[in-house]
Image (cartoon, rainbow, N blue to C red):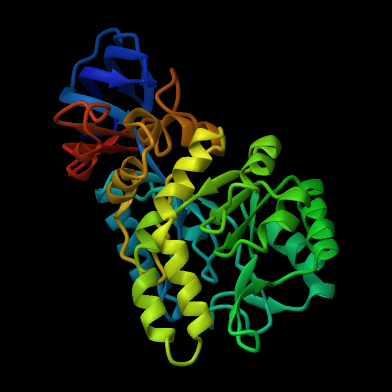
Length: 363
């Protein structure tokens, strides 16, 4: 489609869960609900249109061993694009992916800077590994480098203890989160276990990744503070394999990981029922493949979240949470078109009919 062409999307445009329109137009890369006067070169796409999907926990520029080269990062981003993911919150990466911002053919990225972890308490080559006295300074550094988010590693295995344990003293995270907020950034944290959560939430954290340790006594605290969770259930599915690998050396940790896995759906449903915001994230880019956004939405439905709410967690609701537009008048034309209504069956998300990014149909 040439730069001067007009795109006409017709059928059903899902501007919101209950805001269904018959058509939209893309002119100059932006959405309009008014037919442009004198439109000549018009391309028509028919189907059910959604805002470009959101993966709110993804790592472009990272693999299981650490940072990757630009060609590999490009392949990761293209794989996400082909799955309909057009907005990514990159939840920690040691790679500089700013070059992606100049590419209209790649998903838009909201970065959280590089992970900040305790010394020798995270995956090698991923994070800044520091001690608590330096936490405020590193949070300030990543708040300035990122796009409004900072990522902490809230807990990890303590090899002396042989189990998951919090990484940071309460007062250190309180001061660090306050500094991030002063600089205009929100803070999220990787957390598998139960005992890291209260200190982080009471310190003012904005989001928890994975949140497998969320328990009945903590749910009211999350709900009261409005702390969101990104469960990454396609990642939690790997816990039994991880636990098997640790059985001999860390049996306590392995048993704990299995328990967290066994109650994962109850954990997510309990959070949703209490009004805790839940968003879609795949944790792609570590050991997981990219392009799994449809599988994660299906997992939320399996956990008991109603299909329309699971859909919102990767579309309307997720975009609002991240401060990015959906299918509003004048918004950038980032959308995905499907054969059937994804509100009726979220499995439709696995087969995009057309992807429109920055106003261009991706072939």
